[in-house]
Image (cartoon, rainbow over all chains, first blue to last red; front, side, top):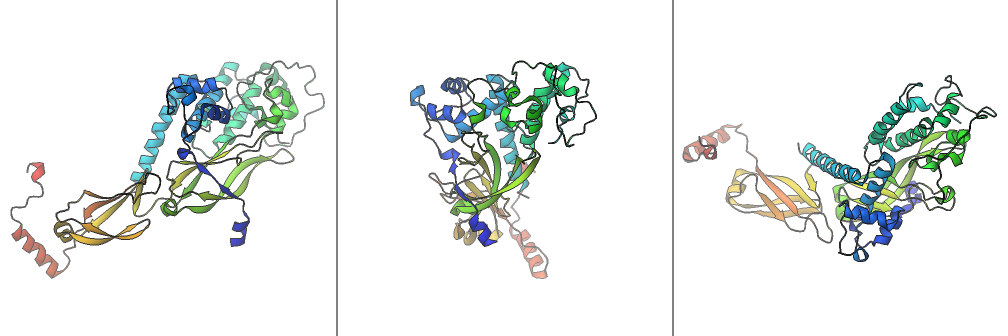
Length: 108
Length: 315
């Protein structure tokens, strides 16, 4: 059993929430879209990068993930940008409630 | 390869109108979208659905599919009859955002990859693999010290005959110290393989904690319900308290009341800004189950005549 465990491929990850220095170019490349698409997401308030001007923007790993979800919802469900933004906001709330429920459930 | 019953996948009758098919697709797509649904098979269902819709929404493809007849059962071994689609003219691509590489061999055998809707310039044979998402459950103690977890991932893979089966894949993942529930670990290149020269996708692991018998966790802060004897709370005491990083001695100030919290700064989940550890105080009453204990409670009744625990309720 132990030796089997040793033979498994060992992978090391990065915690998304702790990646904070991604540029607009890096995020659009990771999401496989043009930079304009990411700018639209920022304009809609789906993600809020640090910094004022687009060339100074810095994104976190979480921004990158949110952008991916927003783009997929638009592509797959035929919703527009505002609809995807609303869905994301509601998903955030559902997830927060689920987490809260779990904490309360483990309390007794 | 296996026959796919596209009508059954969408749950519509064979004579459903195009409008009905569109409506049902929209409903099911919202339900099974992997970014929305928490169901473990959401990704597989969503792909099947996309493929079924790609055929049924298109009058030409649907007519050709219908011509195969209604005697086929899902999963039955299937080979397209020779010249099965003679006389049908397929046009356009018309795949609205459905990933053509994700379609089954059954689909490809009927319509060919080209009809799956590769758009010009997209390079269907060099596309990046999909990102995969999974959860990894760790113990709270692992977040304090870091750990290696071997995780098993279920992944739908097609074998040489085009049968899709769930295959288990094991990985040893290093869990970085300081990670907490709700965070995501990105494993570059561990998602679905890319097509052709395309790079593989990434694997995102969402971290969650196994429920703990003593501790509750909110973000980086850790909470413990700490029972005290009435005299410990009233007079003050030094008591032993478990924390995920080991036992500590905690000084309880005199006059502590139930419901108040003692904060141990920086003893929550470690990190650049470490969380805090909170001991939420409650009072445990010794049972009045012996003569001495009984007598003692009576003595207290005498001694605390003016104490009204319900003063705040106005009674």
